[in-house]
Length: 371
Image (cartoon, rainbow, N blue to C red; front, side, top):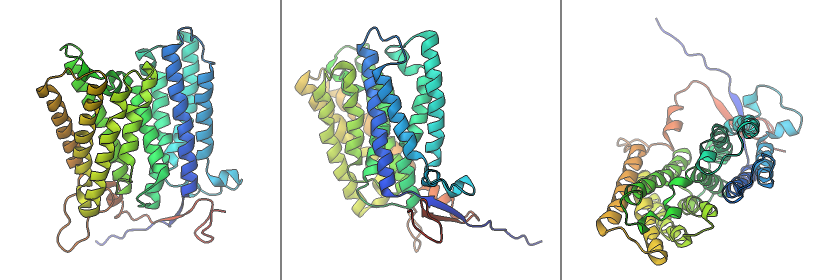
C-alpha cells in the first residue's frame, strides 16, 4: 500500500543581523572580563568572605548586558506574536536558555556562599554552582557562532564569530587554569613527579581544547575564519596569567607566533584543498604552538626537559590533533557529485519534510526587513 508524506507548513524563522551578533559578542567580552577579575580576587584577596563584591558586580552586570542583548527584537517592539520559533532568531534559542540557567545558577551561587563561605583556588573552580554558571555562560557566549551558521555566513573575516570563539575558549581555560602549561611552564621542571607526566597531561588537555574549538567553528560554518586560531590561542594562554601576576609571560606570548603560522597554514589549505581543513587544524595547531611555547620557556626560565621528552610532547599532541581532525574530515564526494556540505549537521537536515524559511529578525517573509 502506498504511503504519502504530509509536509508541514513552512516555518518563518528569523535570522539575526551581523550587527546584532557583534553586540552579543561584545557583551560576552564584558562577562568574560568580569569572570577573570573575579578569579583574580579569589586568588589575591584573602579576606574575601562575601558574595557582594565589586568583582561579582562586574561579572553579573556583564551577564545582564549579555542577557539583554539576546532578547529578540520583536520582544523589545512589543509584538512577539505566534510561536516562539517565529520570533527567536536562529541560533539564539540556546543562548536564551543559557540566560535563564545563569540566573538560576547565580541565585544558587549566592546561597552557596552564604551557607558554606567563599571558595578559594581549586574549590572555586569545582563548586557546583560555578560549574552550572560555566555551562550557562558557554551557551550564551556561543550564540554568534550558531547564528552565523544559521545565516550561512561564509565571509573569511567574521568579527562576532572570532570574539565569541575567543571568549568561549577563555572561559574554558579559566576553569582549567590548574592544568595550564602556558602559566605553569612545566618544561622548565626537570623533576619526574609533577614535572614530566603532569606537564604532558597539561599540553594534551590544552591542545585538545584549542583544536576542538577551531573544529567546532569549522563544523558550524564550513570554514575557519581568518585569525581564529590566533585569537583562540591568545584567549587560552594570556588571560590566565592574572592568577600568578603574569610570572611566565614569555611562555604565554610566544605561542601566539606559532598560532599565526598555523592560521596561515590552514588558510593556505582552505584555498586549495578545503576538504582537508579539519586535518590541517589538528596537525598545524599543536605542531606550531608547542615549539613556540618551548622557545618562550627557554628564553625566560630555560627548558629542563630532555630532547626526547619535549620533542615527544610535540609529536604526541600533533598525533592527537591529527586524530581529532581526521574524525571530522568529510569523505571525498563520489565522482560527478558535489562536495560534502558545510557540516554533518547541515547534511542531516536536508531530507526532513519540514520546510524552514529564514527571514531577517523582526521582519516577516513578506516585508523582509528588520526595522
